[in-house]
Length: 85
Image (cartoon, rainbow, N blue to C red; front, top):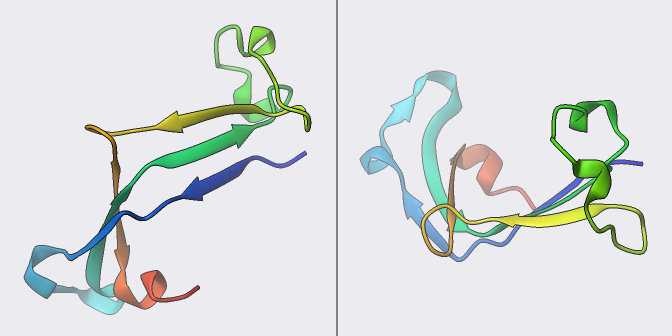
């Protein structure tokens, strides 16, 4: 089973006034909620207290959303990567 992450982009902004950072180039700031679905039995989840007691969906995943601030999280990506589908 694989973990899944879905980023719902609500807003896009130029980051650092378009300054280019070496070979990565300019970055873009993306804001919006991040939705996660994780396998509670995966080795990567062992450190999560009581994850084995969390409700799972029909695929056996534990689902949760991360909102940094309200209601968004910030992601900064090189424009060359952010533009890719």
